[in-house]
Image (spheres, rainbow, N blue to C red):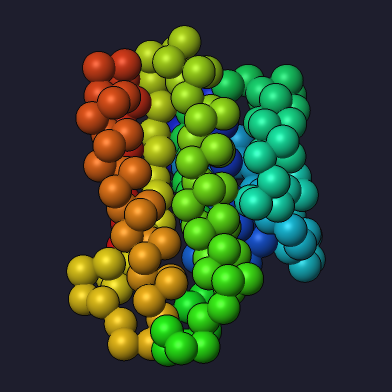
Length: 177
């Protein structure tokens, strides 16, 4: 463990498993206070990680979670918008409204409103790091999950816009595909 991120608070959405969980652990190893948000609590010992149950489709739950995190840990310095669901390899003919809406709500709406909730604190500190997890498919496309690719492309577009919007305030925004 190093102290490179000592004193910083990080939030990793969708952090209960997979890439989100490993990202959260890596941030904690660097000394950050890390809160993972997800629908399900990770199995096993969380160690230094804190957990808050949040549905990325619920804007009021997102705002409440960020308020609670800020009360206990101070403003969020690092936000990793990782929450997501798979494309389920469905051709366009099999993607119904429910599947389409879920894809955009979790990937785009959740990231948008988490970012909106943490940016005021970042602006006050004149420091923040936002990382949006997009996908290789934004560049390559896919023949069997256009709703997933569309949602990740929208998140990529938000990344570019936010990078410009927040640049003067010490907040950087990047995407990892």
